[in-house]
Length: 352
Image (cartoon, rainbow, N blue to C red; front, side):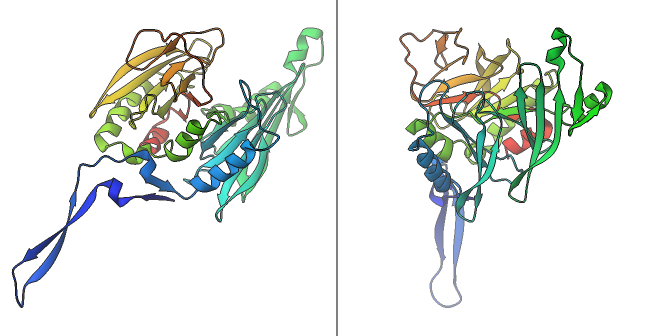
């Protein structure tokens, strides 16, 4: 649930007196002000609860610092309008995500899912996925969250990777051997819809944590209707020619309390992100940059962005074409670009 603080929302009551004596009335008139809404003025009931859980993990033996270390995410994967908290202890192969949901004022565990500290999320199906790539086989499992539990929906197995060594090709659905055609038909029920990876969006720095909890989910209240229409128009135009795995994001990359729109053309190696900024009620492209599988990193302390690819060292600040020199990464980094799948329904929800 969200509560907008009236002072920040900019509503003022002017008391107008109409005459004196009997038969006269007093009228209260509500007049809007031009005071700007800040993201921190929007209050959600999950914020303090998730903050406590994050600090609890941050102080535990499971927390790992540095590159590839602990990160977290806040995103609605159940479709009920309230986000879940996802903690990724590390990016190591055997590491699943820990999933929490708000129940009666506490962060209740839903269990674990994923590998490498991430998991797939299919918004159109309201399912999450687990993928394990073994040496000679792949396991893919699709799950849903029902009645406060993670429930397995369908499990797939194939040993395509073993064919080079002369093994027998095997396909299984829910532990029953099937033909390749049956396997493809069954798995396309899920994979024919867009997917994003979740779990490792925010680092555990103090400012990153503050941004995730008190800014990241408030942009719908901060942006004006005209600004929302500008961003929706851009995405609608992109969607006409976009690939099926195109995605987008809304994030404040320069600390001015007005979010940028980030369009990711896909999750492939050479995908680019286009960044759009607002000037009053007009949006324009501010930058285009190379990514790592369609995402970029934004350091909210230094207000710079760069590719997560270790092979790309260029760092930029929004609004400048000059490379930033002497940059040293802080622990307040956000993974941006692929927060939302590019569908009409999701675009409307993101800017409601």
